[in-house]
Image 1: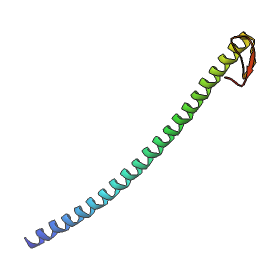
Image 2: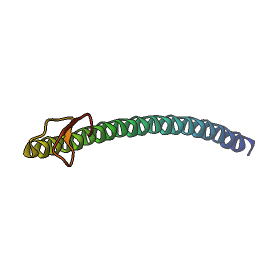
Image 3: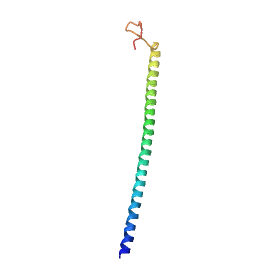
Image 4: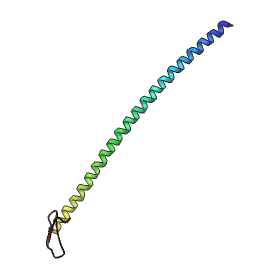
Length: 93
């Protein structure tokens, strides 16, 4: 009987050691996954910010193009305007 108890205790010790190994490996995988996800999120956020900046540039460019077209249609140069008497005033935008 003592022999059986000793064998079971050894199995229990081995199982506990294996459990500790598995838990340690699980923690490593969790940490690795968290790092990988964090890196991916950072990459996506950087890409989004770059896209947002590019969209703002394109929007501003289109706005400036419309302004140039409108000024050209009125016969004005960029940076000058005409008052109600038709006199050119420079610097009023």
